[in-house]
Image 1 (tube, rainbow, N blue to C red):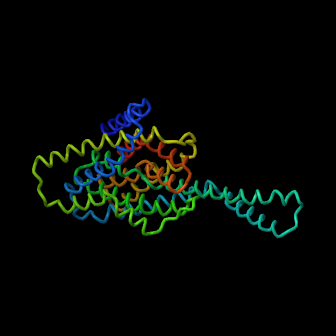
Image 2: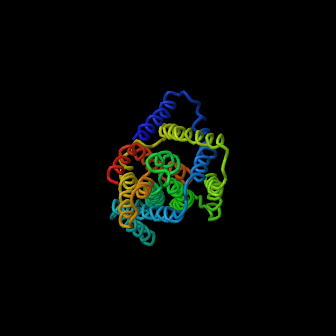
Image 3: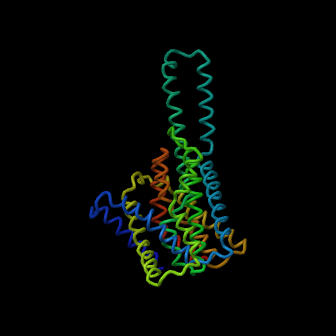
Length: 341
């Protein structure tokens, strides 16, 4: 449980550094880029170099993909449940406006009709942007910074490979793949990315190449001083990641309306990991393997959601609120899964 207390303390430190203005404004961005290009790839390289991947390459990745699509499906069902009847009313209104153009109306109504007609597409666009943020917040988790920092301390070393594979698969196929596609689909802006741009983004992820190098260098015996240096460097990545999370939480804008984030947060950190743990039990996956898959699937909403909301003009309030609420709730959910599993 020390890892949870430790993560809370480092996160609070990051928040204080920003709130009290002890750090320059560019420092969070500098720290984030350093972790993205150096820290996390180094951590994945060490885990890939030291972990045992025999007979585990396909299973964690396959379950990760299944969890992503499960989160997508649950989010769509929950959204439709919340908005039940609302979409039908919009369709009826649109149809009535179309008929109104073909009929003779009083002059006063004719003057108001263009204003109503222009307002409806804007409303529909905002509705779709909210739907997109809701779905992404329910399915994309912070398996990179938080997952890789917390979970290795909770399981035996033989299952570190599962953590690496889950995190990589989730980030590459989720945040950089399916997440980008869905964000583009629900975008209220004119930006529509081509498929090759998504592929380019995936191939440029430094953590992917760090994993490939670490995996293929398992037979290479580094000098003791190099091994010790790598291990010490990884120990520095964990607190740096939580300090960055604290800074990012302090800088989030638009998380005042937390009621919008309740549904996607519950889906992300309670329902989705609960169903994952149940499915693992039914499939005969027990022990640390089940614990890894359950906790990784219940990681809080990824900060990538805030980036996607900015890039594709989605609902920033839902994105920011979900990140904040799910991250704050994480210290409560991890002990829950440790107790149940």
